[in-house]
Length: 275
Ligand SMILES: N[C@H](CCC[C@H](N)C(=O)O)C(=O)O
Image 1 (cartoon, rainbow, N blue to C red):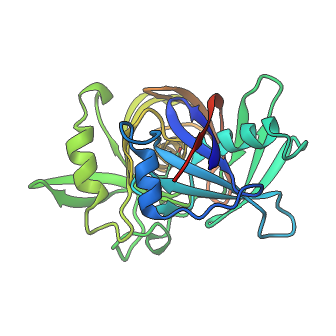
Image 2: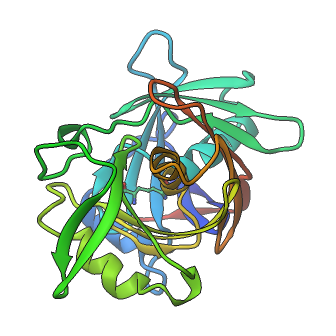
C-alpha cells in the first residue's frame, strides 16, 4: 500500500509520495497506470521525496512524467514539494535545499502560503539543452509539418523551446506541440512553449509538456519563456506569466544569475493505492 498526496500548482497536478518513510519501487508501467485519469489516480507528474544526496541538502527531489519518463526539473512540482515536506513536518526550515538530477534548488515558503523557488541558472549552450545545433543562437528554426518554425531554446534543467504567437488562444498547441516535442532537433525531446507578449512585464503562455502533453501550467516553462524573452530583448527582468491555470511571478537578472519563480501550491486530497 502506497500513501500519497494529490497536489497542484496552478492546475499542473501531481501525486507526491514520501519515499523516505515508505519503501517505493515504481516501474514506468506503475507510473503510467497511476497517471491514467480513468483507470488510475491521474496526474501530470509524480514527485518522490527522498533522502538527500549532498551534505548541504535537505531532500532529494525526483520527477516522473505521466508517460513514465524520469526528468530533472519541475517548477510547479518544486512548490508543491515545499508545501508537502512542510505540511508533513518532514522539515521546519523556511528555506529548503533539494538535490535534483540537474543540480540543487532552494525552496522558500512564505507567510502568504506562496512558494519562491530558486530554479538555478539557465543553460544556453546547445549541448546543455540539448539541441542538435553547433552554434548558440537567440533564434533556432526547424522544418515541421512542411513549415519553418523559429523559436528560442534554453534548459532550466530540462529542455524548453519557446515560440512567439500573436494569440495563445488560437495557437496550434496540440498539433505543433506534439510535432516539435518529438522533433529530431531535440535529442531528449523538449517542452514546447507558446508565448504571447502583452507588454515588457506581462506574457501569456501555454505549454505542451514533454511526456505529459498540454498542462494547465508549467513552472520551468514560465521560467524558460521569460529567459528567452529577455534574451530576445522583448521583456524586462520581472515578468508576470499568465498560464491557463493562473499566474506566476518570474525574475531573472540575466546571464549567470538564477531564475526566481513565485506562485501557489495546493494540497487537494490524501490517498492510498495498492500496486
Ligand atoms: N514535462 C517536463 C517536466 C515537468 C515540468 C513542469 N510540470 C513544470 O512545472 O516545470 C519535462 O519533461 O521536462
